[in-house]
Image 1 (spheres, rainbow, N blue to C red):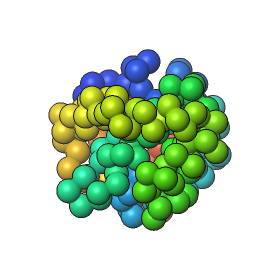
Image 2 (image 1 turned 120 degrees about the horizontal axis):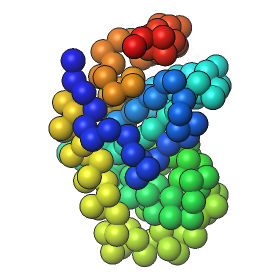
Image 3 (image 1 turned 180 degrees about the horizontal axis):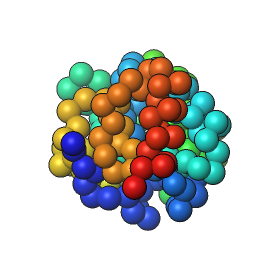
Amino acid sequence: MSQLRPEVSADDHSVGPVDAPITLVEFGDYECPHCGRAYPVVKQLQATLGDSLRFVFRNFPLSEIHPHASAAAQAAEAAGESGSDPFWAMHDLLYEHQRHLDTHSLLRYAETAGADPVAVQHALDAGSYVERVNTDFMSGVRSGVNGTPTFFINGVRYNGDWSDVETFLADLTAARTSP
């Protein structure tokens, strides 16, 4: 079984208690249609599990097939400079509008998310978050990720059916009780 490398740290974007019994890590691509289908599944899991779940998102843009994925990831990172809430708001907006990830749209989403669109534009122009996105990507490579979405439950790669909420929920719940 593949292990998550590196382990979740304070540098990761996460929502939910740090000491939650279940940590779910997603390696995702904002332009990936499969990730778009996983997005509402993860939202439902978060709502169902509440404080029992810590959700972590790491960027894994498949730029060769998704030309806007890297810029979208960088825009989310730039929005995150305004705090955790703008990052997660931007994350949600990117998945909810993943067919519209041109620069103009990214800046509009950043403003809606509560980030400064001028600062996000500057960060995109300067490539300020290329290294951060690449760090996430390389952690995926080291963890055996070769497509998106890829999930890890409590540090172990999940090879089950993420598209079925009930199956995914049962597997997450089982992980909570595992040693």
